[in-house]
Image (cartoon, rainbow, N blue to C red; front, side):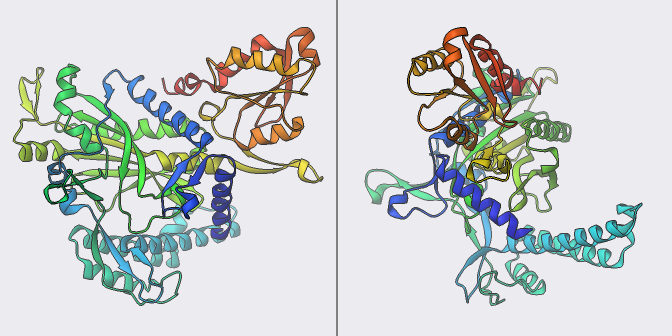
Length: 517
């Protein structure tokens, strides 16, 4: 199964480059590790994902507004946020392969392998017994209980080591689990040491006089330092939220798995400001809201699950991930955190400025608590691409009876419709261009008149275009066209005037948003 998933990811990477979704950055200079550029189709898909998130947050919620904060911030910001002292990952090297790893990820991978062993035991038992009771089996089977005990012990040791920054304990855990380097196969590890993930640079025209500043490792702090500006100018009343989409930068120890983990990435975050003591109510509220939003995309409800954090960040009193079933398994897609009043309280302390809210209903001032939702835009892009990628055999013939299709949500597709004249003569191109001109104010359209109609259909399938409209000689006579559906490949004849209604019903952003109203 792992090999099959690796192949899926490789195919997605190849497809993304071939069809203009994602290119290696600076490829003519042999690229830059873990940095990617979005191509002509990729940027459209990415912008559509952003629009869907942004409109959900700011258009469907009367009490959420947006900001766009600068990437550069005063360096004290990151002292106050805890990033200067606490934004570290445990790093370990294998002496034989010379490869570097995150120590906690090595342990988490070992736990995942134990969980896989439990699932295999369950699957074998389920095949043997007709009326199989999973809960009873898991709670009584000696082998499963042994695996589960080891998982619980490992999780507890990992949490303790991470919580106390005990790097020798982390190394001992790796040794006790007998974790081997996947490249060299040896267990010859260095000591585990902490590695700060922030990129630093200098601001100023003369290096000696420059101030050390950081590229922001998250977008949240730009929201917190503007809390009062937004609250006062927007006359916002608690509870209210501030949303932001923007670039963040982390000097990851190991950046891999395509765009899943990069050093330059984009976040879509919302900080929701609430009364102290109400954080758990709103934490559960936003867990449900965000899960419903993800599932509205139609990528398969079974591909999502919640995962509670064992090791809470320094600012949180509750945290979980919405995990998605990527080709490499269930991994974090979005984080939901109860950040307490940590951020605003620390910014008040370090800046000397009062960052409190006067609550007229309670007739008192207080520092609000915060619930955060933070989704990785690039990861959501990968989720959409990987689950939409399909290889289909349409018959027993050759290449013409095979196709690769991106069954991505129609509202997110780079192009909503391709308008294709059957041949490049007899006035058909002119008729097709007239249809494009009529549609393009409402929908992104694609026009093409090269190659056979079948090959053009295949190209549109490969970039995820939901509909192809074919203009033929009959179109000149009665103003009808053939419209082809991407996922079913079914075709129907309808009037040109009806095309816009079909697209509005299935491809507009409204068609997605109305699922959430």
